[in-house]
Image (cartoon, rainbow over all chains, first blue to last red; front, top):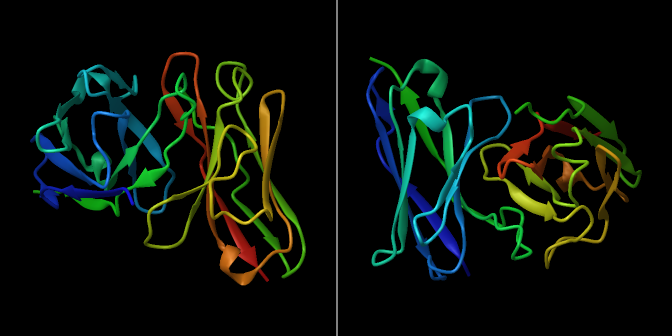
Length: 121
Length: 110
């Protein structure tokens, strides 16, 4: 059974950089694409971006200037950095497996439990 | 990219059927058969219910079905059960190799 677990700070100061890590178990991180998705309280889901084992990335155009994703195959982990944080970035951040349309997996089939990140001084 | 459009809420009685719509554009929903649907209970992570418009992952009851016509996709839940009460989100791949979600629909089982 594939399991994902987010880790990182629950509180970030305005203008600082958020750093989150997703640890994957039950599957090799080298096999799929991996995404970050966030959800402000009481609102909908927003796809942040995805990364492949090669390091290839795709980002949401609305966040592209502030996002960096990386992957560590030796640790079976991938990470998110989001800089210049503001209150509008306060949300639950999820990591998920997916998506890779050419491979017939154009969806997010496994999700972490989510981590609440609050931006406040 | 704009979020896909879903009704804010739908409701139905146990045993009835409901349908949730998801409207996008020719650059997302209308471009590919890559629409997926997610169920989210309060405080929980989303769960994949339907992918590629109409396919169900293993373990998802066949009461859940999906379809698409043009720029609008739909999720139908038949034989409503109390445990179906949740938020539902659609998602679509886009022509710019990104993914977009709908705003979510709150399903209430009366």
